Amino acid sequence: KVIPMASAKEAEMTKLLENTFRAVNIGLANEMAILAQRMKVNIWRVIDAAATKPFGFMPFYPGPGWGGHCIPKDPVYLAWKAKVDGGETGFIDHAVYINNFMPAYVVQRVADLLNEQRRSLRGSRILLLGVAYKRDVADTRESPALTIMSLLSKKGSETSYHDPYVPHVQFDGVSCDSQPLDIEFLESQDCVVITTDHSCVDYEYVTQHSRLIFDTRNALKSATGRYPGKVEA
Image (cartoon, rainbow, N blue to C red; front, side, top):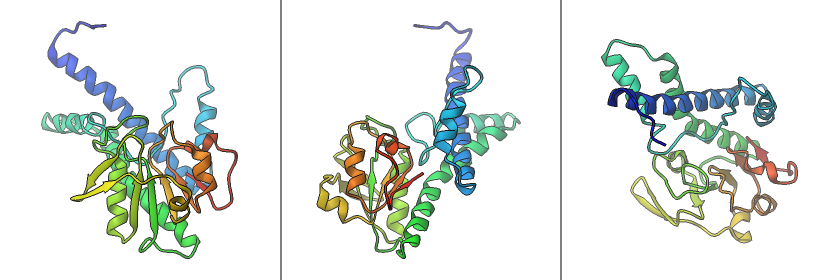
């Protein structure tokens, strides 16, 4: 359906508002996730409970960052234009900061979890489960998973990935291939980081054959309970 607008400027601002609305709310969800982890509260249950309110609340969910060709860019563009015109964009600026911070936060959480097992990031084998920026697509544009993979590699981790939609990917000038999720490979990994919650992945199977899981997407919700040595975000 085409919605007539008074001008191209109004139409463009409509797009910017919609994408910025999502960016700011994703940023709020990510900030709440960081806060909840420090307070030892399960943010996923909190969001599900809040979503039972019949009005006034729209659930947004935390993750490893933001991605795609619109949401990570449009709010930044809008904030720049606002500043050019002498305006301020406090909400937008903070959302950009939080969402850009999430890949580094994920890496720190993984480091802390490995440290609890007397291991360091350097030399650890880490599998990223999903490199597309969102579920069930092959699009890796601005994907936070690639940033996480780069950060882990720079800290000396042996990184690999599995993504049923992305057979090959390049990051930091290196070409990588998606690895098969066979039992031997999963059991050889020190940590599996779920960065994209593709619906075709058997998470129960992954859980059964992994030493340690850090779930940034709540993909393990459908698996049966919390398993020893497994960690949910």
